[in-house]
Image (cartoon, rainbow, N blue to C red):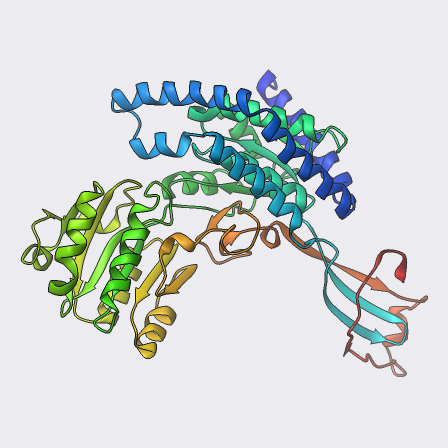
Length: 445
């Protein structure tokens, strides 16, 4: 048997500290958690110069990698912070504090018999580990949601954001010095991640944010439950009954407003009967915004764009690139989306309610919109305060994962000396199994 390495010892110590912190944080009252969140927001503003200086170093290094062809422009764009974005991050933390407490909610109450009452109550998951991409604001979002939901969190950001992540983690730790030590840990080396994945005895959930290949790697190398955030191959379908002015605005916003994120549209599907009316002006508008366009053969008969290949229908560009395909009806659009989409976010633009219903119910995705940009798929915009990520799976949580997605539940049974023996045998007492309109509270009040 090989000796335990220093990395394994250090990582194990961090995990053990997280476990101890999780037990204490789960019992911290709402006011304590909210005060800590507001302290984080204040500290982000107070440390603006240090945060932006660290981020500038990351961006400079990333731009050198971009020049060598090793990074994409989309990655560099996701990495950048400025004063306005930092203020948005601080306001996001405050919005998390303003959310309703996800803990201690009575999800169900049932009287089993007189004075024997069963309650299902929301509680934290425990220790959650997250591995995420280049966006340093993700570190703050995840930490804020973990704190509000009473979870300890172990954070691993991308190496391209290492300077930003270190400073942000330090600011968060210093702002929450009164909380249990170890509630927010930071790991940086790949070896530490590998060790984390081995600790299914102590880590309760892993949340990776990245490509399908990356999420698959995590799933294949751990027995810890995995809540995956994969790529977003999103579509907008413009129906023959669409308001074309609205359709053009929705399709433009979904691509151009912020192309580097997972809820930006990658393929525009257009009903063949309205393509000649929609595409010429929309293509001109895209090109003025710097969008590189590709289309199928039918599209290229109407507008002068590059030729789309089979690979384009499965591509997440994360940049100012877009593919266009003409379809015969909404059902063909549904088939294309289900074959090539990533189960993230899809949108239909139409004035026909029955067509909208067919599209929305026929699509297998976490979010499906009618007459709205795919960019609305976001925890903050959904009113969740923020998000840990967007889950494209179907187990435990789906779509933007906010506070509720970071909770589970436990059962509390309140009795008065009740015995199972009383409910067995010839003279067994019957169970009432009556639903109660009651809340479980500490102290039994």
